[in-house]
Image 1 (cartoon, rainbow over the protein chains, first blue to last red):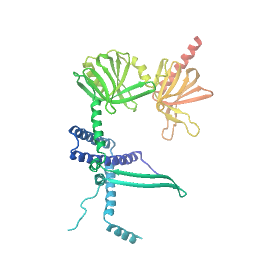
Image 2: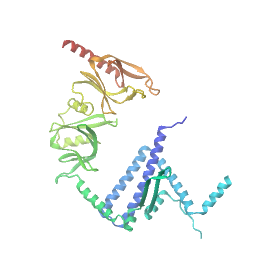
Image 3: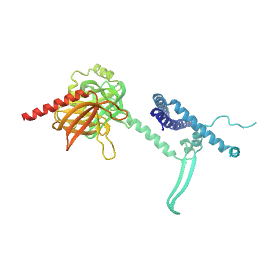
Image 4: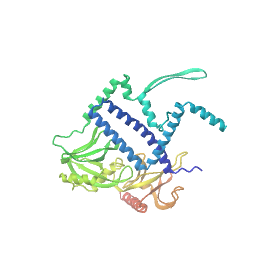
Length: 108
Length: 322
């Protein structure tokens, strides 16, 4: 029998969704800083952008606290980082391919 | 010296790199059946940070236009206050908007100024409700069930235009106090003259006669075809003419039984489902095209039974007089 606890299901799904949206939010934040540094934005625009980003940060923190998913979100993000790291590592270091092939051959 | 990867690559780094450099995607795709091409897709996409786009001469005009548009919009959207008007209180609130079939809670920010009470929504900008303080004839704070099911304090305002406004305010008591300090009279309202309005928010549009009892009640909606019977939340109303159940989820009358077709009322305990055992259920036997039974579950069922019995008897004696 498959036993699904409603709470853990909520944690899992909500944590996953928040983690993904948070990644997008962080990307937007990085871009916002870049635009600010580039200097094309007016002062009023900078204030508005800064305020909105801060509100967004607070909202995320509040949602995570309210539903107690901060830990799950962190885990999902760490997991994503690991995947990216592994794929990139293989991509930019072709010598790893032969290493991997070798380990596969040993296993076979 | 050997080059080493000092730190783990994260998804944030990856995204930043992609956006910073920009990617160009060229996709040609033909979908076919049995070797015959049927649908062609020819996709050219460029994804990059706006800074990068501008650097390469893309989207510059668009960037300028969008920012100008935002600045213009924001200027218009600001809540317009009079020159001698100051905001005294500022809290989250919502207003029960009722216009024909469109009825809903509309949330925004509630501002109390020295002249007006305003509910303002920023995005998209609109004044959802406003009244001059001088036009408020009465205030009442009443604790009731909000649409989320939570118990909340509602603020009722009776206005000079004979209209009644229902607001939810984050801190209704403070707001009421502040209104009274501004000299708004709050003495002329009681729950009695409020009831028709609270009803109008739910079933009031269909009940014109006198209501004897009302309360939150779940009703077992009979099954159809492949679906078994299901319990639905709603409100039960007992009037001098009929018993009426208002379905919360559908927002309409789900069951209507004229008093003279009620044949019997009793309360007993039943197993409703594997999870709900030994629940008190109010069973009403009534004459439809054939003998039928309606099952209700909720609070104070024996009180309901007494009320229904009384009304049915009253109704019968009233008929014989006529």
